[in-house]
Length: 363
Ligand SMILES: *[C@@H]1O[C@H](CO)[C@@H](O)[C@H](O)[C@H]1NC(C)=O
Ligand SMILES: *[C@@H]1O[C@H](CO)[C@@H](O)[C@H](O)[C@H]1NC(C)=O
Ligand SMILES: *[C@@H]1O[C@H](CO)[C@@H](O)[C@H](O)[C@H]1NC(C)=O
Image 1: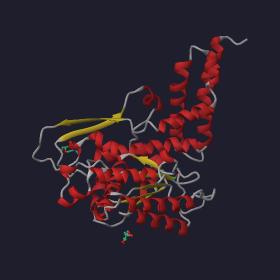
Image 2: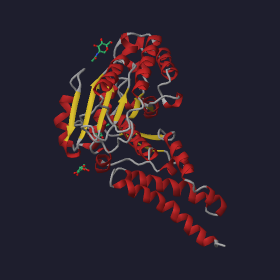
Image 3: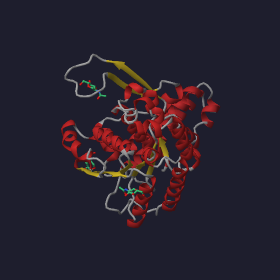
Image 4: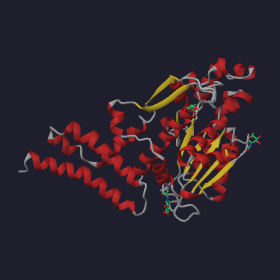
């Protein structure tokens, strides 16, 4: 008979060393899994060991990897549990930004969120994670702001200044090769869903797929076409071409021109949701009239009904800009539509943590 102490030590070793071993095995192939390993351990210890420690039989039964995986899966649903801190700051006459508020965010301190061990990655961790990958962000000005946040994270301020002009040429693509970390980052100006569908067909035609794909549309269509049903049709067409893209051949990513460290089987795909619109702040009469809350809701329900998103059985994980921007609040926007950098920064960190979780799941 094993005593309780030996059992505890054995169990703890399994929880600690099995994932470490797995991470170690992949480390040679894939350095990013180091982070996943760390996340895995945090999870295993946080979710299982602590609550179950007094009861050894529960502990043993909870040790199966599948249970841990299940929990990791549920971590994805906590990614948006973010709290905001928006404080007025003294207005400086030299302040170049229009915001007189100090805005910051962090993950909520509730038990499940803490157990998931989400982390804001710093420049070098983000660079390690993304090293060698091809990232495509396609959409309207919201997508451009996401690109800006991502660049802000991986570039130093001087490099950032030098590219700002190129990135903000209106209505044009922007392609960057970030040499230090071999990241290819493409912003594709694709204001309508149909533009996104064309992009997908282009990937298919060229048989080259990005490692990370972030897409979003809606605002442009709402303003210029103002027809939720038509938007729904375009989303369903897009879903069809997305599904025809998947699954991608198993050797994808292994012998292409870009061998991303996060490409394992298929691209990691995200949908960039529309921001919360603050009607009274929209800067033209046309916008205030056409982008009403009724129209906004109709567009969102078309999105859910199109089954593009994971939560309705689709392939795309939602980066929920609507909830992030709503919770940051009207103080975080000057035109009721484009929000301050923090909102998109939070979205980037949600995406990076989702990538950590997903890469681990694909083992
Ligand atoms: C705005 O400017 C102030 C001072 O220049 C700075 O501390 C603050 O972080 C800036 N806020 C944003 C959202 O860029
Ligand atoms: C990225 O990967 C390359 C090749 O594996 C390596 O030489 C380089 O140091 C890495 N850069 C960073 C920032 O991790
Ligand atoms: C996007 O799609 C619209 C409508 O199909 C088309 O008129 C426009 O040229 C496309 N724009 C780009 C950048 O592909």
